[in-house]
Length: 353
Image 1: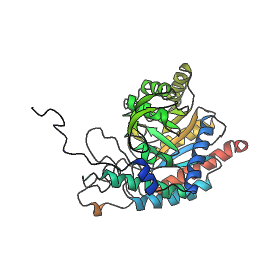
Image 2 (image 1 turned 45 degrees about the horizontal axis):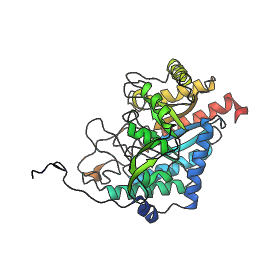
Image 3 (image 1 turned 90 degrees about the horizontal axis):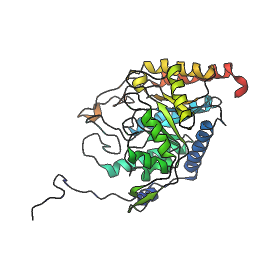
Image 4 (image 1 turned 60 degrees about the horizontal axis):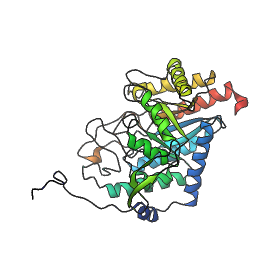
């Protein structure tokens, strides 16, 4: 017979099961409490039972565990300084969706050399998340590959479904079964309908194909996720201005969805220029102080040092603490923005905190 199957498959590499990885890199009581606490606070913020703003802040992507841990230590100290007004969660992104081709993140290619040792990538990701959550610092990530969640989701307090995948039925189904709040970004062109439709789908019970903790293919049945919310990241134009926020709020009301709105200070809202993030940040803090209670949080792309750099063949020549994907603001700028916001919020509405 003429071969007709797997014509373009070069091979299969068996994965260790989620259960085996979790036994190998075991969650501790301290980490468990951090994750549970983070999820609980975020749920309260989404319900307005906690008046603080949620802030998901950190590198665009993680490629260097040492730099990520240095950043986490700094952020954890800052978290305690601003805890009256802001609830800080570290952005710990291991998977990167690509518009065409490029490095897909630490899980897919942990050594930045195209070897795509995904098993080692999963180990590195879980180990780093464990170290960060053991500090008492909650973590956030983007859920991109539907299988990956089984390996790391127990260490995540908030997750995102990105602009490229918000419209994906697979990701909506996945999010309906996740144990943490999930933010859905508007589409790349700025359209809100994909994210709003996703919010309607994610709160609904779903059935889909996946794997269980033993790595066995199965039908996954979910109960629906009540903690979905929208994240405005801009599109063909920025969408963080008061008119865009109000338009989003009215769209959510029309569909009987929660009015909770998060704003991404990066991406199209800053025209993908790191210096623009501070403009968005200060504008949103100002809107919140002025009484816009639909706003529940912000996202910042931040690293030890500002800007970004290209991935090169000689990985050892990469600058320490500088993003290899989107441009990020520096740690110093991050700290200044957080302390400024904390001061502004305390002065404007001291009785709230």
